[in-house]
Image (cartoon, rainbow, N blue to C red):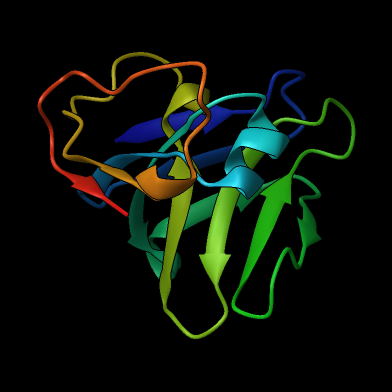
Length: 123
């Protein structure tokens, strides 16, 4: 089981499902919201239990982002037309047991760092 929480503990999440797609997102929205690169993995939305009052923001016509209204932790990303939901790997309490698989939206990455780990990069 994977369990996680926001910085203040007002929102928690857990899943028994095996997360997929562990990635680091370099898009401008993730960089602005997280202050850097956002790492996440996804599970079917039905397999993720969330407690607390998540504040959802429709950041685009295709997806919404979930955060804690108290501490501001950016916890979730959900495409409007998919049944999967991504959760922040940095919010997981304890080891994730996952390995990073890829970098996404690398064409939009900041100019102040390099990606040099040899993992696949998707523009």
